[in-house]
Image (tube, rainbow, N blue to C red):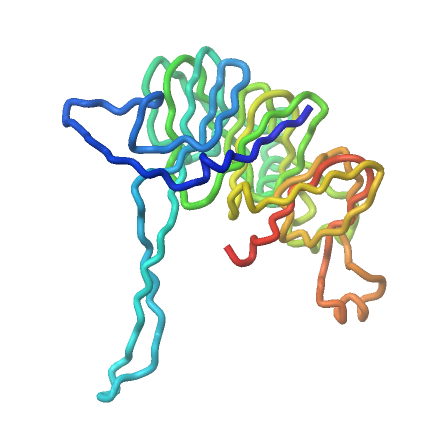
Amino acid sequence: MLQWRRPTADALRPPLLLLHLHRDKIRTLKETSLRDPIETVSADGVKITAYRFVEKRQVARVIPAGAGANGAPLTHVISEATQIHQIGVELSGGSLLLEPGALQYHHGRIQSEIQRHEPGKGFLSRAVASAGTGESAFATKFTGTGTLWAEPSRKHFILGNMDAGDDLLLDDRAFYACSGGISLSTHRHTSVTGILAGNGFMQPKLSGRGAFVVESPVPVEEIDVIELSNGEAVVDGDFVLMFSASLEVVIGPLVKGLRNAFRSGEGLVYKFRGTGSIWVMPTARVS
């Protein structure tokens, strides 16, 4: 059964810490004051944890504010707090697939190799699928025992576990990492109008059993999950993070007729039918 977790209120509350650091103290993945753990998932010798950096970081935005008395341009500088996240992985004999270029460093007895998605297909087929989904045709596979850190990001990470039969279709470029029991392939929409959709006519597909990480523009507490039981739902594709592959999906205009489609202002939408889950990001456009 597919499982995902919302962090507890305590985990989401900014930590209040007094740090007493000594130069001879070495921070480790298990005991650290540099990062604050948010959520953890495990499967088959792989433990994946999403962290938030404890120290506050600031981002400055410069906003034009007209001209001064001497004609010189005036600006306002606004300093905003931002959160930086990072994925840490403990390998205990298991294997991890990671998005190419996402590794920061690892230590321990860990071997790495390049793994092709959908190895039975030729180069041209993989290239077309990669262009259609926005995902690389390859992933880096890490196997062994040790600790691995991915690169920090200002985006958010959604962690979950899935069983065989809980296949998921992801938004373009949402895949980040998964344990070795999960495979990444390409799903092709059969509807002609799907070619014109914002997510293209192909989407990344996760299959198998294990733990996974997807990258999201919004935090997990801002994700709404629609559960369908032989039901129907219509969602603008720009707000869909992922959905159950068991759902029947048609991508097309909200209303019939080209003229009516333009009048509706909605463009193309996802029309779901059946039984499964849809992860929606209501605040995606204002993040």
